[in-house]
Length: 221
Image 1: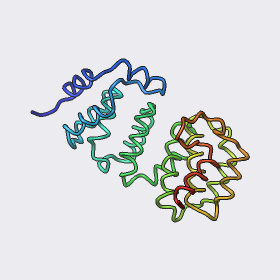
Image 2: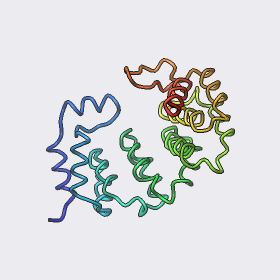
Image 3: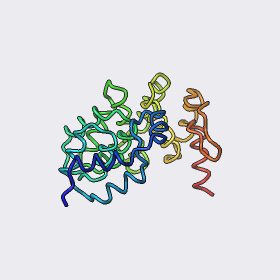
Image 4: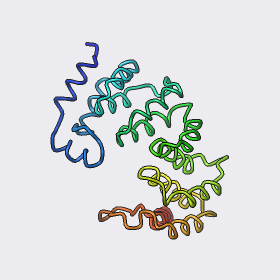
């Protein structure tokens, strides 16, 4: 039987859990579906790009998460991906859009450049998320010194998600590029961004100097 938008929405509604919604809403995510069960719904649907587009258009967060799992990332144009990011807003939707779709798109690099310089801090945060990934996996032709200069000048005043992703990039430069490690640590120590971030036991602090030191220690163990 062919899946329909109404059918998927009904299946997701049946999985709604008020306790999960309460936890998610504390993190800015307005849905109450266990992500394991949501992934199972997507697995059952398999890849269906046109259905994904229609699910995204509903604006429902759970439906959009399913859409991001069943779409064909390379079929979205650059303009479509840009519009999707700007209307996403919900943190988990942004995370999955960037990680599961944009990173697999041929438009990832031009979007990274455009988004990083965007006046909207949420959009810029997505650009820096892509930058952190590229620092780790494909740093060729990136000017890492210039990135450190921008981070040094702007990270302390940057709002929310943008600050978080700039900090991620700072840590990634320190972790992945030993010649710049001391400078990255010094910038982190001086700016003190996320220094007092509450970190659960057995988790690594997002404070860049600690983060860098811990990951380097693990890699050399």
